[in-house]
Length: 279
Image (cartoon, rainbow, N blue to C red; front, side, top):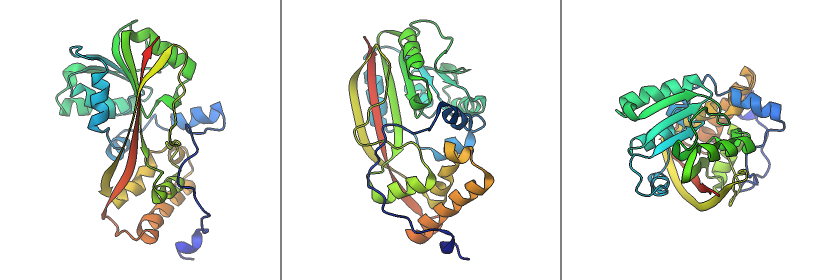
């Protein structure tokens, strides 16, 4: 049996997503998927892209002329957003449930020479343990949908200084591009949303700005095969299912789309940024 024989012909795939947020089926399934990230670190940091400069500029502009803004990054992971803000002069506290991911962030902070204004804390976003009104900016990148909305929104309101800002940001595969949408289905990528989606936030937070931009991340094809290994679906799957996902992505990129193995491909992404203020 050949590689192609092992796959059933896919049916039509719509060009855009109908999702406002990832679907979990149950709270228990959501918690199971979230735990898949606890031991992750280097692979996630290598394969997930950073955030566009324009989105970072808008986050910084939201606090005006505040000198060395105090940032609390919820679900900070390996510091993709945290470190970018530290490099812009912010004092950053990065929180995550995964000590492994935060260890990667600390190592990068040392390498990037921003360790003096970068600290980490293993804590849930819903109960940070930080002082009241201790943040000028609270951020959540690729993470807000993992939290309990009511509890985390209340915690954000507690730790934000008066008049300051909550920034929610997502990098997602640009599934308005048909081949990318099919890729996302094969990779079981949960971080896709419909055009015009808005995240669910609790009471007491009002949207003051929404920003969307489209861009590309250029990498060797094998990186886009391996990108699936950073997804919660893959991390919690059996070895048989993992092998099938990687095998199917190998086929899709190299046989179906015809890219030479290891050649560079521009993957279309979209960044959604939402800025909120307490009311």
